[in-house]
Length: 107
Image (cartoon, rainbow, N blue to C red; front, side):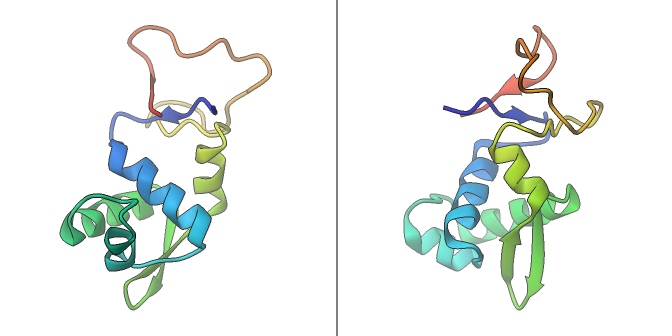
């Protein structure tokens, strides 16, 4: 299991959306919901996609389609800290994990 460094702005739905896009390469909110993997409403998934896009984790391809970016893939692989006040890159070899009150881990 990969340790992910999610920012305070992230929610569990974000991980599911990113995982879906990683596996499927692209998708619309409707596709994600119909798959059963992303168990949220279309409007909530759309809202989260906009938030993920504003942080550079997904890219809007137009006409409701999104794809995961390299930055999004790095987050899924535990190589990116998405906290607003943290440096992007995570040193996975030297990292002993977030200290109390810092970043929260999200599975």
